[in-house]
Image (cartoon, rainbow, N blue to C red):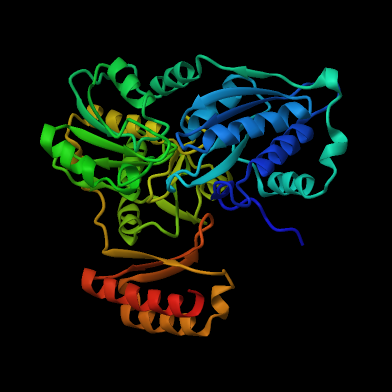
Length: 450
């Protein structure tokens, strides 16, 4: 069997190490272009990236692979991942490729592919690309010299995306005078978000907007919002928004400096949509990583919570299957299917601002819908990923912790789909008991797999 290239969110790894090498990027470009070719049609494939140093290398390698097959490549430059999903349809492209490792450190990079409809590829489509990459048949499909593709650069990509985002904000509302702090994580949102919010007449304070290729996500952004909390308090802002490196997730900070998680935002959005009669089928789609407190809040409001596998692609699949309009993850990936085909941190920020403006209340007063149960997550570095149910020490440790928690908490142990990490999550009645249980399980995982 051939090794899988695609994980839960595209291909990802350390730059210049397999599979994230320029050679592999060329093959990915070739495979995608070849699959899209048909009689009388020259594929057009757009390429975007975040601000990682290795992005230069990979965008040129992908373009080389695409053009070698007789397809055209359209270079977008730094732009959030959901921007590529939008532009793929907006520019009538046959596919969109994003070069990013999302919230990972700069050493990592990744390749995400969107179909012409703006949705991420299915497992079957990814397998077809892998089959061509590993088949050694790509060289036999190279274009004749006169049919080699061209590379173009789209100059108005950010402008197109900003217009799209603005149209998701209610026309009868205004951000004039609203004080907003944005933490762009030195990533793909560094230029777009401050520009857009200023155009919408908000008072904007920006931090971490000076990418140098290596500072993306470093002690800032959605994974490290402490700096945002301090700045919101310092300037007495109405709200703060922290994005990750590729802008598809959002963590908010309220007017009192309190961090608002993805689960809390989804509770706000679900209640708001239900009140307007726009929560189709009365469903909110989340994942197994969502806090128990969200389930309690949804039950009180009479909203059905459906849990999908971890990963925004799985959330989206469940949303489409169930006819839901909103879903997401506690990490801050939130999908508004009435507006976009993928999770978009900027769009989520605008929707949160809309709720604040509609209700004419500060976020600290709006964020009272759910109570977060104490939760501890420990990431354990591992060497390999055997089936967890076959690891006797881990199974035994889980049983012991679950017996102690009974119905007052839960345990979840799962492998990361993008890193050599096993995530141990425990929720319980008190922080002390939850932390002790998580450490016990993490020790068992480290002993068996570390």
